[in-house]
Image (cartoon, rainbow, N blue to C red; front, side, top):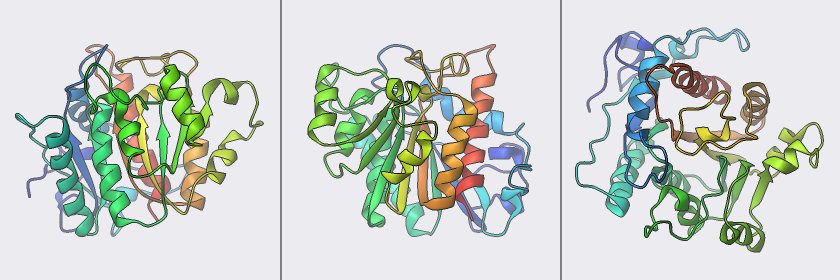
Length: 296
């Protein structure tokens, strides 16, 4: 089991808080990019997130805690998965076996991508382990295309693949899709909180509680960073206007941590750009903030 030592790991924390045996949390990097269709560079996302995290403060003043130093909440940053010639189904099977192994070891797994197609694997691994699991998707896109550009394993088809084994899916922030995806959502009663509905006040001023009401006790989160507005997240393959901002997102995540059992999550689709460090740092901060909200 290879993992990064001090100064190279997530948050750049000491070895006694970041070795595999003593850590309750593992950061699994999946620098996989095979089907991106517009902007490229998601394979560089995991490395950029880990690097930026080394400048994130340990202390969370909102929650008055230093999570990474708490017993049972150490964070081990594993060496990136090496895909070589593994693509599509083979790549997903490879990720699935790794996530499953860490779950069997009692770890809380955070997967960093990479393009969104990889998320099928950790969702399936958690679905096989936890009963009554709801999937919460933060995203600008529905990702329910049956296939895209000739591939059923496209980043634009990830939720279609997940829906093959569970339709307990809640989507937040959706604002781009084709007719096929819209019809799929309606036909299968997917809980989709479209951006235009949230912004028009359809769910009231406290839309976050409406999202919570759609979720079961156990929740897995797949977080595509293009959910955020391009004004704060320009480093992603397909940025869409009318996105979401930090405070409103943190409100939902905090409520989620207080009322549900989040069993794991992935963060995908960061495509770092030279000269624009903020999106990398914000994504690293997002990962640590989520851990602070979700880990007891």
